[in-house]
Image 1 (spheres, one colour):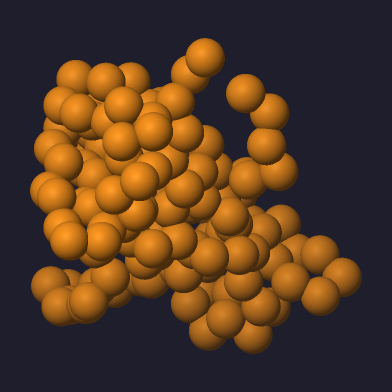
Image 2: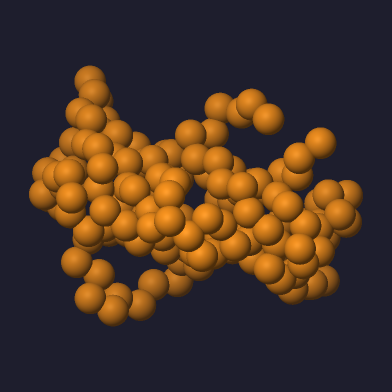
Length: 142
């Protein structure tokens, strides 16, 4: 599967919570972390999503917020992938930040230069990638 989304995670559906219009999909990825997606009931049915089914979670890098020093912070976002910064690449306007995740894999984010400076991001620093469940697109292999 080829897409323009920088972040692609293959995993298995751990749970499907049915709603009247939207469903909540829990996807367990490499390293035991979980990604939560909110998708329409129609999408759940057409993709054949149920526990044990292999699926992809796609997240645009521009939808990922970086947080450091969380110290038990409580947030409304459903997704928080914790790891260590493996790359900080300044560009002409923004900075690309890549966080290496436990068990393999990584997540990329595009943030402003000012945010990268304010967070004092550097290789090896602990950080978390935050993104809303509604920012996750689910796909299944052919």
